[in-house]
Image (cartoon, rainbow, N blue to C red):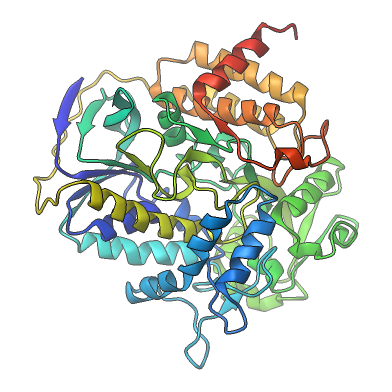
Amino acid sequence: MKTVTTDRVIIIGAGLGALYAALKLAPRPVVLISPETLGEGASSAWAQGGVAAAMDAKDSPDDHAEDTIKAGAGTVNPMVAKLVTQEARDYILDLTELGTPFDRTADGGYVLSREAAHSYARVVRVKGDQAGAEIMAALIEAVRETPSVQALEGVMAVDFETEGNRVTGVAIQAAHDARSAPIMLRGAAILVAGGGSGGLYALTTNPHRIRGQVIGMAARAGATIADPEFVQFHPTAIDVGEDPAPLATEALRGEGAVLVNKHGTRFMLDVHKDAELAPRDVVARAIFEQSQAGNRPMLDTTDAIGAEINALFPSVTEACLRNGIDPSVDPIPVAAAAHYHMGGIATDTHGKASLDGLWVCGEASSTGLHGANRLASNGLLEALVYARICAEGISSEFAPVENAPEVALEFATGGTAPDPEAVQDLRQTMTNHVGVVRKAAGLKTALRTIARLEQNHGDSPSFLNMCATATLIAAAALLREESRGAHERSDFPDTKPELAQSTLLTLSDALSLRSKICGEPE
């Protein structure tokens, strides 16, 4: 394999965490590995709700931390919750200085929305449901103007090189031609900020490329993975047959929108005292149950928002209109869809993985903030906080570099692209058997199917990465014999206090379990 060596810090990904880290590392030279043009295909840009921060005088970081811990169902690291929430306000102010046009009140304050499981309105928005896109636009503009940042667009990471317990390089190839032969890129340090795993599911709100690849890469290199079973399903993906499914932001329910079924019944009133603003896992399961019963769940915005929805929530309105739904007069059909991975590459409070030379921030990481069920709009906040932490950690461990030549690449042929049918089989398997509600028989079926797909299509490193993450999710879900947060086992419906702890798993552990399952009679 051809090798290219650089003094630049290598950042895998081009979402909010990657861009913010690149800015915080400046003037240290970095190179961003971005499968698409900056801003395209990143989950961060699709985030509608906003960034959670205690900006109201009645609110406090301690209240924010307490809500985070409650939502996480017993497995949040309190120290991490305090660390992240104490600094949240500073990040809103920093993003404002970078040019993010947050919604403001007449007196200059920030418009705040209340989302599920928050005790106060504390979600800072942009143009109603444009937070992710607008924050990303501001960061991309700043990155483009920062000389120390080189973006390799149209390039994706597929494998890590290791020596002992240290990551020494990352294999990359042309993102739009997976048949290109990989090039080994070695740099000063490697920061993983390449997103989560929602696209491993057939029903998802995630961009096509977010299919657990970077988590799988790290796992295949030997990194410890934390809490892979905890996948959050967003209750209100717009159920119109699009892949990925458009999102009806939780802020709609914060504004008073209600959930009804085809009979017009507000079913959440009998499920939880907070009704539509119950924790996401509660609402997602209720919607899933309505769907399974054929009751066609819908989000009704007509009374609470009405004709104002176009101005307040343009992304939701556009998604509805292109599918023949006028949300000002029609209820919006919804379904629970894979949305956010609370689990990921295990990191310490400095953002370091179990492998030397590897830092992680954003959804690919598991910092201990989210526990079993992420509090709404904490995802972008965590990415910001740990992007800075990782940047500071890298800067402290490596001697300053004032400049470095830009990385020049020329890909040859010789790689193998993932088989589209195999990818779709994998995604459907995850939705069918590792979805909102799980049971042992289905999880074992999933592990057997993943093993078969991996055996038949293992010549593609990108597909092996997907299969690695899928295996970790299914194996950890099988091992956790209880229901907790976003992890619901129909055969173990109770929460067991003695299991109120994070799962720590290596791919080797998960493959051992998978081999055992594959050896059992079906």
